[in-house]
Length: 159
Image (cartoon, rainbow, N blue to C red; front, side, top):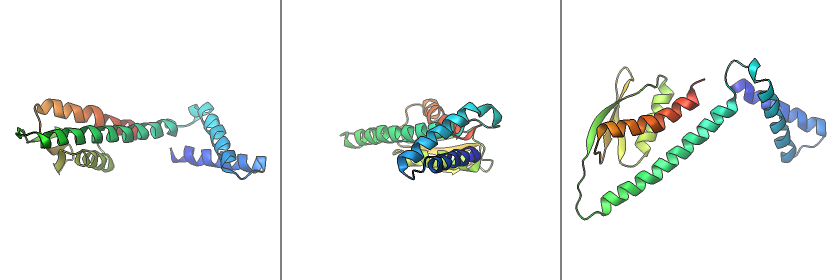
């Protein structure tokens, strides 16, 4: 992936020198030409195109902001209720993520989402212990995390 990004920047710089114009618009045109050339020659690369990982990372960021907004509203609605009928719970969530940075990212995304926090990661890094402020169904909460954050992280990290 890093090779593809460097190659794309190299093509953009070469384009700038070929056109004798050192402006941002010329660089962007050269970058798009480089992206097209990399797309055309994609079968010669061992890994998938970096643009797909970049797109997956953008989708992950948008997913986080969506979940952040929804959980903020949810916690606000819990707080302004006259009678607090919370069902706080600690539950164990198995994870399919393998690398340390993937587990750290998942833990951070869960913890940054209001109403949830990762309390502990097991020694074998296969189970996350999560506290949630209001959980009706543990299986639904686990499926929600697995189908959103964990799936999006796997899209970014897997070749």
